[in-house]
Image (tube, rainbow, N blue to C red; front, side, top):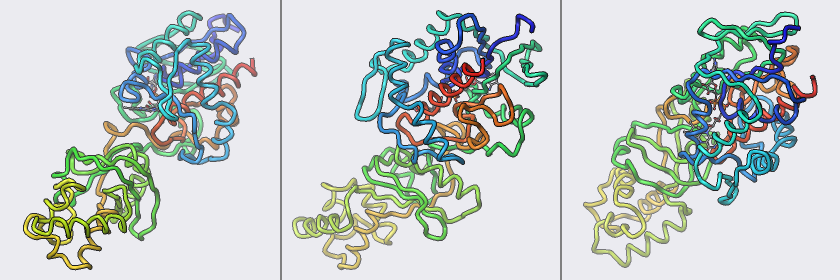
Length: 420
Ligand SMILES: Cc1cc2nc3c(=O)[nH]c(=O)nc-3n(C[C@H](O)[C@H](O)[C@H](O)COP(=O)(O)OP(=O)(O)OC[C@H]3O[C@@H](n4cnc5c(N)ncnc54)[C@H](O)[C@@H]3O)c2cc1C
């Protein structure tokens, strides 16, 4: 065997690729050569953006049911074998990062994602892991159990094991542009790939008046309902109205996946049914009755101003064909008051589109998890591993997606070490 053959080459120096290298350093016999080929001019570009620059790196209450994947059982088993506790232990006791919890969300105590990127970077440098930057991999071929990897400038590298950690297709300026799909397809089988789609993104609507709500935040919940009226997804939390004319915020992003798929399947009547109050319609109706008695002389917007933002009252009453500044609550009959409270608690927003690759925090789709073995090795393809967002597995906000990057990376490292 030629001496310049690497034990493992990792394609992509993002969260998953860096973590896989760090775990390999711990599990492989010393002296084994490991190389990261990163297409961009620095490693961890997307990791540096996470958690609004603070990096919510895991979640102590990870629920496998809150991921979208083609193989939920395997995912649950993976998270069981390497979960949040293992990640926290590795960061604190090996990488030397002090962590802090906000509820179930885990951050570096500096609340700076650069702390996490640097901890990985320095650890790999200390342990002799080689990194080539601006080394975009353009093809991978396999001969006699050795992989040959070609990069854009024409250089070639050989390795016994290859880990593909090229990410998804959103935030393409970080280097994860989804173009590696063809390369993976050629190396495996194109039927193993689920097309990438934006997930954790905003939703847009053309309903009149929605742009006037830009910047408003409501604490409530959102349900994604298909054209047949079936609820496809539900989440609670803060809803933010966007300048594009639509809704965003964590609870909207968490259900956006369902809306994206319905729209792309051609459903023209997808709705986001939002509770704009965080309370039940019965409670809201009682609150409106009280204000009708107390502020009978005020117009509706003014009478409800202590419990609702004027723009929200205007928007909802417009849907009823009424003007909130032109009538008092006494002029509404019981049926109209009930309709008002029902709409405030379940307002149907027709969804016409969604934030694209520049807005979506993760991609759904990727290499099918069911086509990987327990160590993320492609079935029937010895020595080829796929990890992180390149795998068809995406979770909700709150550290779920990075935890998948750490989990899949650690399992691949363990598998490679066992095969040495
Ligand atoms: C704004 C934002 C905020 C987020 N916040 C959070 C959060 O707080 N918590 C959380 O859990 N998740 C968060 N995420 C999601 C999380 O960042 C990703 O799930 C995670 O980075 C995926 O890791 P990865 O290593 O699989 O892919 P990436 O981090 O995308 O890394 C892939 C790497 O591969 C390189 N690459 C691609 N193709 C090639 C090639 N052909 N040759 C060589 N290199 C290549 C890319 O340049 C890139 O560096 C956030 C995402 C965004 C965009």
